[in-house]
Amino acid sequence: MSILPARDVVPDGAGPPAGGVVPPTTPGNANKIQLGITSFGNPVRAGARATYQIIIQNGPTDDEQVRLRVLFPAELTPDPTTISTNAGVRANLVGNELRFEPIAQIRSGERLEFQISVTVNQPGVRNITAELVSRNSPTPIRTIEKVDIIGR
Image 1 (cartoon, one colour):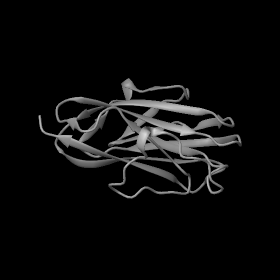
Image 2: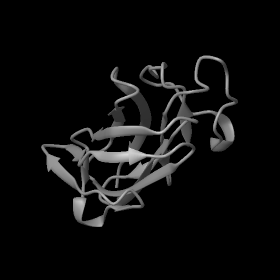
Image 3: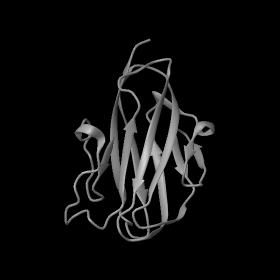
Image 4: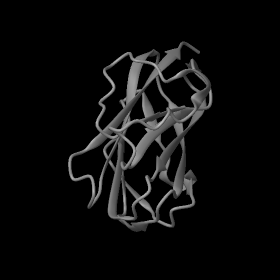
């Protein structure tokens, strides 16, 4: 799992921190909302299903109008009917992008989780990108999870 500081953009191929823990708070991310992706298995096999979890961890200040979208490569097809979340919002599938309804408010320290199942279509090394904006963070916050897809 990776929970990254709001100001960071993870380059392609960069891996999550070991152990999947939230990095220590630093002056640059102490008051920011954070975003991460957890993989429940990597590599994944073509022809199978895989599950990913998107995590939003709010900082010490309430935030509003949180908009989350998750972009999947063509090799992974998300199934919006299998999404489970504690955020109380639905998602629309547009191409291979899940666009979640805006989250009206996220309280200080609140953690939201979105579990998404996908069908794995073909082998390759690709990225899943999660992106969010909010009232307090109008510049997009992005995190990327590298996915290794092996043959059947």
